[in-house]
Image (cartoon, rainbow, N blue to C red; front, side, top):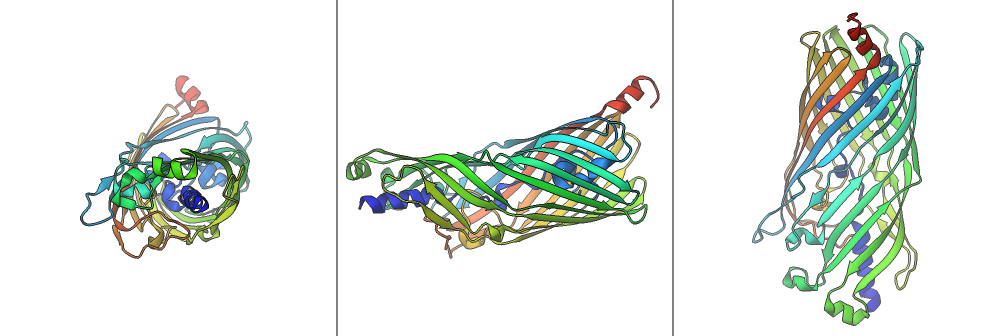
Length: 428
């Protein structure tokens, strides 16, 4: 009996650790959001560190860029018709970026260093509500620290490469009970928190410009094997504590999983000096994240085990462009469609992901070598009703109706120190 209780507990603790597409925002960048995500070929600001490092060679002089985006995930979840719906109460999460670049006065080279997302948008629910068996609090972070360079050897060719350390962090808090809604006082409250220190990656990019008006952009991020080192803890109610002889279960673990490869491509056409339009496609191989290997340190009762997953590959399509109204003001807009990595039968309120449609808009105000960017994106997720719930290795209950959306509102500033100095001397 003791083994049954604790085996169930540990499986539940580990089962929601899912780095699916629903846990990440769309790439990054205030201008990117305004263009509907279509920035792989344009790639002319320091968010190219993640989107396409070949674009660094477009950024001349010495630049400092800072961004702040506020991301909100709205979720309304109703498990049973006779139950009241529950809502994500997280007011939002900050999504910052900071980067610096310079060409050291070279014509064909540029270099950059930056820290940025993608970051997850977390959820927070009330404790005594039906979703507690899948999620109470969930947060995923995946910041990158990257050093990159770009080479422009030919008029029609730009190459870029970056090396990055990726710090992954995951926190889960939720409940489990053999009695379910019948008597919540017997719920087990479980916690997991873990992070990686030794996950490294690289990103390569290419921009080909066969004519003055046409550009093709490509970038690639390889598959990463991530190991999260952390702790799990569970508070046991009196009945279980008396049965098992302890009121708290604790152990340390290492969770190994795969962060899939991503391939991006885009084509951009410059109609005039003031107007461009870009179409991008992104593919992410989420099916490679087929399991979590759980290695427990002390193993007082439970031994190491494997959690199966059932993710699917995703395609993302984006279209967007800029229009420069004056030398000072540029406006932009765009649209994208995104597929979910998690299949509906595996969905849970800890990270809702369905087919997504998004629209974005933004502007840039440029003066004296300083660019001020504003951007907004709203992501519509298709409502779902799940009756056939067959999670891969999970015990959490994700049946019910989901209505969800995302909002991202951001501001960024880029300072080109050379142009700022020219403006100060009256040369601009």
